[in-house]
Amino acid sequence: MTTASDIVSTAEAEICRPWLRHILPHAGWTALAYASVAEQWILLAHWADTAQAHALFLDPAALTVVPVSTPIENGCYPALSPFLPGAAWYERMIHDLWGHAAEGGTDARPWLDHGTWPHARPMATRPEARSAGEPPLLAGAGQDGAMILPHGPIWGRLDEAAHLRLTLDGPTIQRAEALLGFTHKGTLTLMRGKSPRAAARFAARLSADATVAHSVAFAQATESAMDIGAPPRAAALRIVMMEVERIAAHLDNLAEVGRLADAQTVRTRCGLLRETLLQASETAFGHRLMMDCVVPGGVATDIAEGGPEVILRALGAIASQLESVRRLHDGAVLSSRLSGLGRTGAQLAASLGVGGVVGRASGRAFDVRSLLSLGYGTLTPRLAVRTNGDAAARQHLRIFEIEESLRLVSLALDALPDGPVTVALPHVSGEGIACAESVRGDVWHWLRLDHGQIAAAFPRDPGWALWPLAERVLENAAADDADIIRASFALPASGMDL
Image (tube, rainbow, N blue to C red; front, side, top):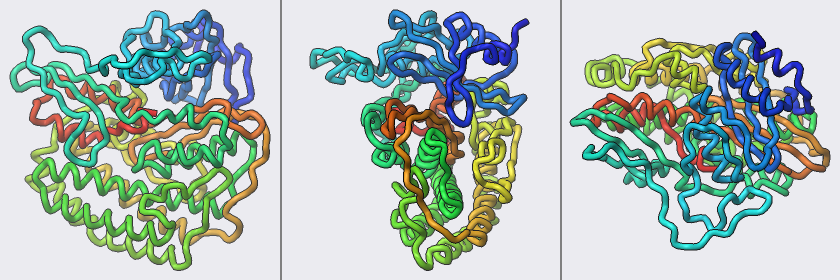
């Protein structure tokens, strides 16, 4: 039997740093999809440009990232979704943006395009004008006579816009279906034709609570394409910012789950600690969320004078409260409410490529900080895994990860090297891929440069794996638990809306 590695190794390759991108004919593309299932390769991302469809795989046995492409012929390419169910959402996005049809795909419904864009297929060589007045697309209807419970897209708080339609059988969810795209920003079009420094602000605005992670992945993809590296001081400051962002977002999630579970002490305490950290971030880096602080070639500005001390004081305040937050989660109120809720199996999480807290709480030991050597060097992030796969396991992992991030930030600041924080970018052509570990999981960015300008780009947010998983997990759950399961998954929307 031909293995996935055999298929890739015999294909033509193009330079895409740090991994070669292999060009497969349609038959080889389909054969690779089939072989990847047997060998448990993970589909990390799937996207397109005007001429090719692309996919990014992870070979977990060799811990190797494998980019592959296949040509678009007569507007079509072979679908991956019959073999890899998680590819269906990507295929819908590809059709909305480029108009390429996934032959044999399992789901041809629109995803980002709700019928309100002035042009269909806006990323195509020739976008198609659309008449005004077409109604927006809603989620698919449930069974005849079934009760439909809609959630969103407006949630009454500062949550990201997303529509979740639940089909009920009495108090039980029979089917869950998500629809995103309400905050589509045209990111891929906005990036094209711009320098990486100018386009970095669009990467930073994909997802507010992962702005640093997206910025780092985009910057490192640019640096890979240009075959340059950021200065050591800039690399260390990126780590500080990523870990501070992780702590703040985990605290926000602990507070939100505490609110929904009627654990007001957890909500208040974690909310105050997050605010303390955001204020320290503004003092040290000039922005509460550290948006636009990371740029290709380094960081925009150095940490402020006295900034390390301000960050460390905020971390000390969090560390002093962390044990009490853990005890509250072990108490009767939260423990009984979260145990068994939204349980996720290891096989399902792995098949969809779910990383982050949700994946690790389900037994998938995947963290790109430690597995793919992202410049953490001797800091060596410690990886914790749970197997229960429920909301309680996810919350306990968040507390552990806060504790670990406290350690990493302290070590990084103690060893902060001297030197410049940015380098000049050459006007070269090239292609690069890079990743970063966000609070929700692995972020991936791909881009192609033409004499220093972006010819094509694609960012992969963890939401591409989390939403399909949430749809599956919500099936057979109690309708009253839908909100807390959604919060426990920390489901994003903006990063997928592109």
